[in-house]
Length: 217
Image (cartoon, rainbow, N blue to C red; front, side, top):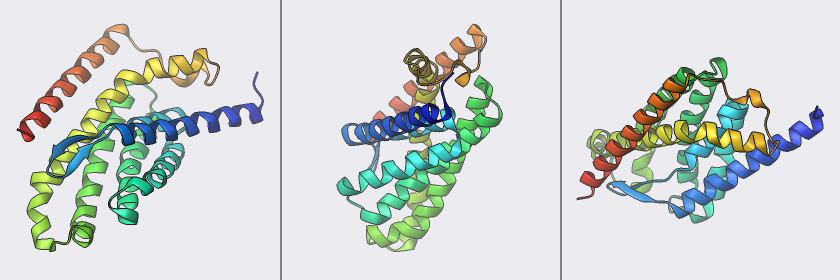
């Protein structure tokens, strides 16, 4: 039986790894989606942190990742705050619901709620703040809310939700085999339900990929 100190050390180690993976994927993977906005997958690791340890862990990883992104960001401090709010809204809501209902359906409901929270948060943020760093008037931002920011945030959060559902169980199983987390970290699901969820996630990824391709051609 691990001591409280050992458990805390393992938790810190995993969260540090999540921060590193989030920063690395953000730095290496940037896919144009619409206008000047690009998809990057760091939110997957922030959500995984929340699914493992709760919404406060997700918020902490979101904050650290946003700070690490600051030196390479073209939007400075405002961009850092934007990145934190976007990731935290998505991951904290998703992990809060999953914490209360640790089932496949709980994960799905949490991710859908996280998508909604992130989209609404970023629409409000872009309406209020984007004119400051884009050098445009708020009147010019308004039409972009539905033609640029709305589809971008739905596509980004949709892709990250699907990928999170696909990799969460195998990811946690690797951590279990390495002795970093206990076997109660993931609930047992009906095999048919897990396969159906995987198929739906793949379909979502295909649809999102087609939409991104169409937006860029």
